[in-house]
Length: 410
Image (cartoon, rainbow, N blue to C red):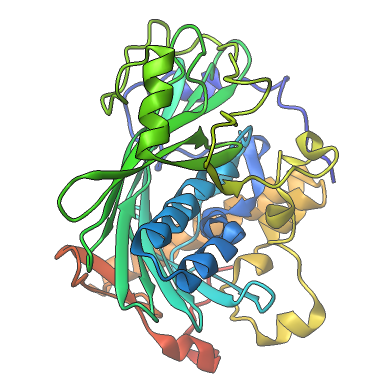
């Protein structure tokens, strides 16, 4: 069903006590949700999985890093105009997706509640991709800032190469008054730990004039820290790659300074910027020998009426009877509050959401009284050998589909 209008609901009445605070513990009315759980949102990483397949097929390590970079950028595209809040996953909640057409399957689990941590693992014949996301949300009076803490790791099996990176910050502006708008900003570094090649990519803040709205720029460096490719594009639209000679000639002709990896000052971070396109309405610079690495798929017709979902997102809650039989009882598709919101029953969604939250609090109290600790069913906390930091490691027994270990959370 189409989303409800939020015009009659005051987010200020909820958030005015939360300035500068973490929002993960704040209970928000269902009207501000979209009918997906955050563990389902994590799966949207994989919308552009064919980019990884292209990386696997390339014999050039620089080209492989180009496609891995494009994949990392593409994960931000689904956030454009996505202003609804996903449902907070319940502790132990899972979600899986098998896409034979895209060559992967993914399993996710909410492994921690305070702080909220969502772990995921992607299995493919050509690669593995895994990570754990700990989103931190803070309200600053006129905007909500989302910091997606957590490193993701991609390994290309054929080449024995592992890449790691962390996603950049996201900000939703005009929470109280005015038109809501969203931007990503910050520096993303993508490292190939085998060849020592690295991408440094700057997601530019829009600035007062809006000239940098959605724009990103950066370089690929070789093992000697020499620039070997320039990258340019918009995270809502496309990413291009340029050889250094072409890029340097272009910047010299335009009188531009070298790409600045430091975020620019923003005079009024909550003003709605007017986009100033580089060429027409596109980020295509039309330079010789440029390579288009990635372009975003257009949204479905009337997407704005349906939470601004992409086609990929619209399919995530689909449930067939043959699927119901094989899914664990903790899968997000089986959450009654999400299903009620999807069906347009706002009161029913709110009622089920409250019941499950109370059930979760009761279970937490029982564990505390009996001095028991929660243990995730499909991930364990260990060390990432590439970063040396703690990471959540997947238990492939999940795919044996023996669900007797699953808790009753819904």
